[in-house]
Image (cartoon, rainbow, N blue to C red; front, side, top):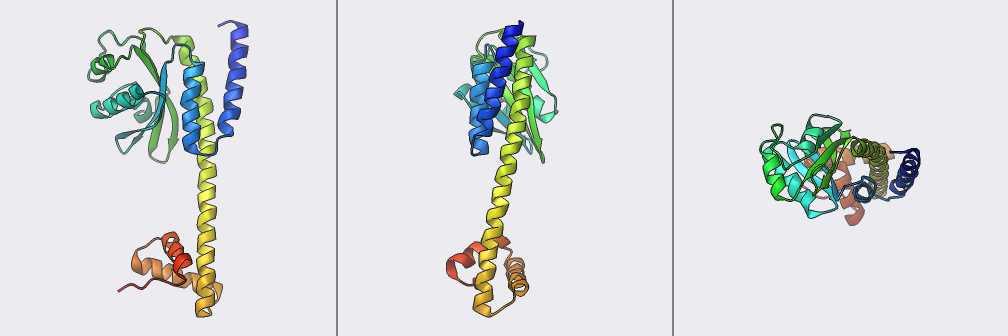
Length: 233
């Protein structure tokens, strides 16, 4: 890649970063990640984001049905470049030519060829708790991805991981703030109804949660709707 192409790529990645930062949810961020992957990585015809959760493969975003089919196949086979990138925390796997026999993924590769996949790459995207994710790129052509495409894909995946972490952090903060608001409203209702101090009202809410085996937030939401603690036998 010559200097002008690298400048164009840098500009495109900067534009992608701004676009991802502007998304309002993790789901929207994921959808834009796969769209940018198809647009930026030469030869890429489809892209997706998968996660391996307790050994189960879940498709989080897909630009084409072939991505969903490939993710399902990798989960059933327990192997594949994207599955292994996520499971083994390996930065990148690349299959240059799926038209030839693969010793590395003997169960996945033959069926992938039947799906019309000629070559593909899998990039470790992020790690969150026990969930491991990967960005997967597909082409119907054999030999579509070389060292240059792998490098561009790795750069894209790195930018995407940062954006996704930021989106998840914002969503977690918003959830925490909403939970605090609902609990505060419920405590206020109990204070007024039973003439309790704030700490005592919260203590009653917490005890009711423990006794009923219902989460505090769920119980608080009930109180804001009914105006009182629910009765339990």
